[in-house]
Length: 108
Image (cartoon, rainbow, N blue to C red; front, side):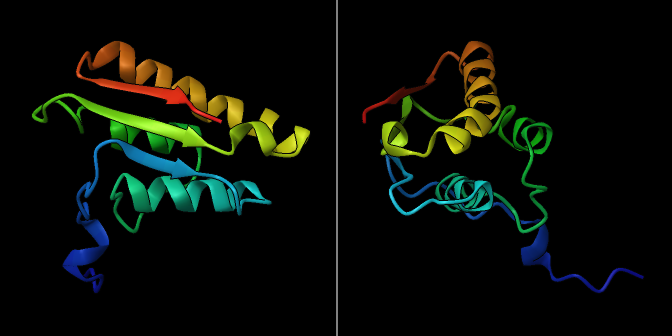
């Protein structure tokens, strides 16, 4: 029998538009995933990898109006972290392609 609380499976909801994804304090990939999890309101079981991100974002924005994500401090990430984040940006590209009302941009 599953003892996990309902909150474990529940999306927390998006509380801002634009969604500000600020990576200024991120030194590790796990910290990038934490920002994504909090800002996109992802459930506790988010697996912190590109496939899991796609699985949870696919269709998330379908019933919302126009929604934008702004990525901040991306250009200040260390080179290796920026490279590791490229797969996550590809997921955002794919989500934007599949969901016309969602877009994102790198602001800084």
